Length: 91
Image 1 (cartoon, rainbow, N blue to C red):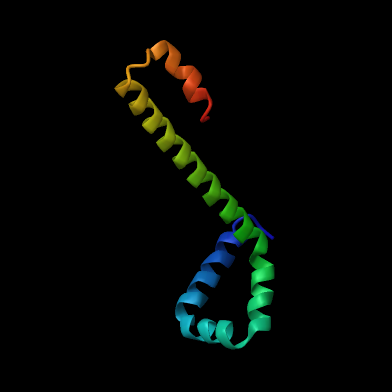
Image 2: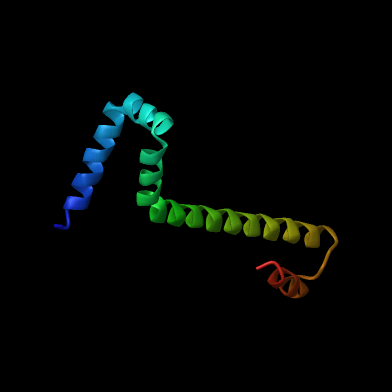
């Protein structure tokens, strides 16, 4: 496969799915074997995307926790020099 071939394949698949969405939906609903085969074929991509999404959620949660912790420490007037040891626990 040439370097640009993957982009060409992706473009063809996108065009095909767009043009044949109803057909793909019917196949997905009525032909579980075909649907399972497609899922198996795409499993690695789905797993990778799930993992990336989960990491992003965790990072956002941690950042949110950090901001909340910083706000709480400021409200109860914990010295800035001591705040880092508390923040280290949520990193």
